[in-house]
Length: 324
Image (tube, rainbow, N blue to C red; front, side):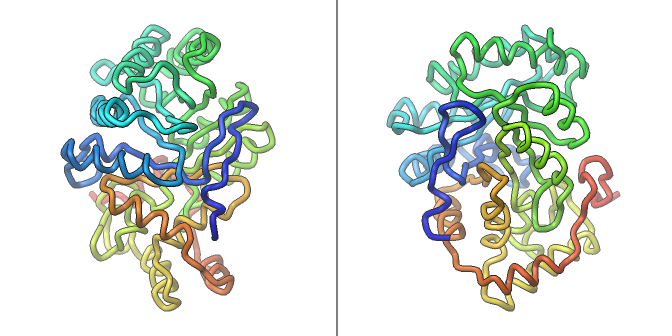
């Protein structure tokens, strides 16, 4: 794909410009229950340093990732090395992890904690995060709640672009239709294995909201392989549930294409997607992502992959893939 992944595009109607690749940093917050492995601070900070040294200018984190550890570890690198010129940090307003409260006051506490942890005075892209998991949907997504506060925070100059980042497509669509968002982050719902975000993507694009597609590897399995990593969308799954992944792998291996490269470029080559978030938790994965973004994939391989079946239901709505 030559250097296309490193071209910059504006988010919504703002002057924030980001590369087609964004690095996700939830893993560096040390979340073994989600990812199945631990990450210490040295590895996390080395990963962030590798991101800052490369051609990608976009990084995504959240207040709640690792109960603040992700932001704190990014902040440690910023304090030591400085934030590269033109680099865009995306973070998220989060509910209280103990009570689930996600009102306007909690949104304000969340941004204050993020700014302190990251060591910056402004956020490039600030998102309302997972309001579906809050104590009250209305409290989180209402005009007098956290979502309304998000826009006040922007108007005060603490953020440049604002968006939403969450899972269920059916809950995202009304928010995209009712609010003038600069961006949205959808995850695990537009991959080689699942296309449940199609309608959401089209609606967002029609309204001038930039679409950021996270988790192109379906939680890691398309990058690490179904034999080595028996998880799909962060859940342990049965052998039968991995069959669609193995079909994708078979096409790729037969054609000499890394499955991770195909999974990444499936998102990158879609003109509706402003940026694709790839989770990384060690420096080697940063380098590998850049290699996969440039890996030459013949059109015949895309035709084979397009012929494979894929899910169109929301993975979190059904949990059909979950064991037990």
